[in-house]
Image 1 (cartoon, each protein chain N blue to C red):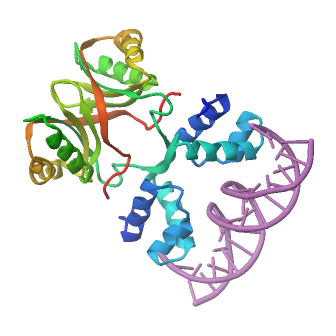
Image 2 (image 1 turned 135 degrees about the vertical axis):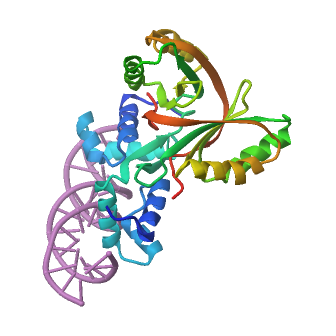
Length: 153
Length: 153
DNA sequence: TTTGAAAATTCTTCGCT
DNA sequence: AGCGAAGAATTTTCAAA
């Protein structure tokens, strides 16, 4: 696969910010016509550089204001337990992000709920039901400082 | 502002997963015609429920494979220092997320770089230049288990 | 609020340069 | 690779129900 040129990265930068921009608008910024822009976008999709297009919602308005960062450590560290944990996490709708970490803490999760009580219920009835969880440490977000899906390219 | 009905939330659920779905496709799933779907989407945008539409890129392919979670605590906790920190963070392109936290740690950041060396340079030349940072604790992501912008609604 | 139709715009393909 | 034209599909508006 060929490396991306300046035109490709400009297209990606624009679409990361606003995927509703038309090929024509992007073409204008690049001083070329719409068809090559269109073809490049199609290629970038096909090659997997663009994974998907999504709408970003306002969490306050849809009543998911409480964001919690939860750090999880496992009791035993064998393959089966880790794979089981990863599988279970996929199915929890409240979990927006989950990373397997190097270091003391095994997993870091970002969870969105309506309120504190819903987070309590999430931990009580869903998260803590997963086998082999050792330490579980939750801290609440006071304020979102920055939140974007953009990569600097 | 009226609360959302079942049709609105269905539209939002669909657009969170794939914003390229046409009004017609969404209408089919709802057994109505395209125009009310179109009008509802416009209203949801206007009211702010939908903040924006974005393309999600593949971080491996664009060479931003290293994700780091960085926990920052400030030395002194006064308004000016906190506001300054929040402002500085906005301008750092490597930072995808930053939250002001309750508890021991003041801020949690998610940072994407090309490699470990680039993270080192980020900390050395950018993050640590911000005034009044006390403790700074970085841990690396071994594997992304789950990562979505969707909210469960 | 939904429908159905009509106009404007964008998407998509393709032959040519 | 990019251009420009042409047809298909979608977006967008709107009168009527």
